[in-house]
Amino acid sequence: MKLKQLLQTNDWPAILPIFLKTYPEAEENINGYRIVFEKLVMLSPKETDMSIVITQEKDGDEDYIDVSGLHNNPKNKEETYSQGIELVSWREWLGMDISKESLANFSESEIIVHCIYEMTYIGFTEEVIQEKNDRIEKSRKARESMTDEESDAITASVEEILRTWREEDSD
Image (cartoon, rainbow, N blue to C red; front, side, top):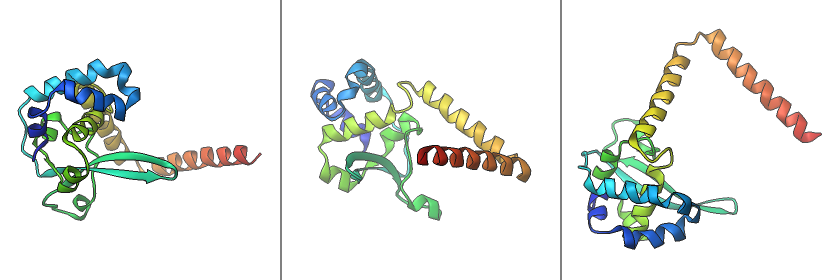
């Protein structure tokens, strides 16, 4: 089952209470989430070879939900690992399968809520998300073009900052 199919068989009034229960902090932006839901229902999906994987995780005493993507037919070693998908286009999200484990462990409403929450982590429009993606790509390209000396200088600066913080913490 694809995310688009889930969205088409559910409506916002059924999703809203699950959203507020799962993410109470979302109440201040709930209209933004509703608008995103309505936009997703209208968008056409883009086929992709990735599945959405939703898992319950624990970090120390904190429980949280992780939403990631997993390639169905990995082409290299990196693609065998879970991928962050918060910067992926919404049309691609709609074309993703929902993993069998996710369907078994979460209700349709919960899956929709977790996906929309993750999709809007950076912003409530694809334009805002694309701007962030462009900044990340520009930064990556800038790092690639650095000389070894420039890269070493940045690393040394970061290490000096971390050392200073550790010293302050121990005082």
